[in-house]
Length: 243
Image (cartoon, rainbow, N blue to C red):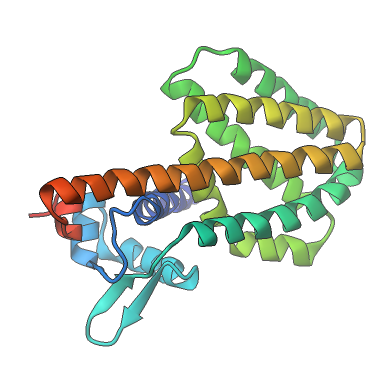
């Protein structure tokens, strides 16, 4: 039962991340409709999870529901990406100071070992997925061991969007490698219970991720603008491959 529920949540997270990537990348243009039936067909799910995902996207300000017209994409700009990362940086840097005092050594040693192993593996799909999993686990540990339930609540409310933006960075192998090294340095600062160093490393890591996300945003939009100039603007149905 629990495993089935977990699979459903993972599926929703994956679909949310893919739709977010399409919005950030300009494949889903501002003002265009997201049709439940089309999305359900593309992602091979029923309309129920799609409806739930659209509700979350609306809560996160990425789409809006218009009376008698359904959901449509809201403009998403580099300023939005920057602001989301600034919120993340403020919250996580505050969280890590508490984590440096609260987290168990066993948890840190376990994730240090996993990071060392992953960073030494050959690059490829499996390596990339290992880094993604470690990214999620480490940042979850930082938040959950902060000792501040209000801070935890604030971060959880935007966690899906933040994680989805982080996933975009793993499309760049060099960024993924640097991320693994950053994570290892943060864990080792936590092992020394050095809150100041851990906070500085985390802040620099988030700033690098922010720059990467904004650069990716520009590259994808330029590519799509060039494509539109050559072949015209595609509809969302065409972008999804729905006929």
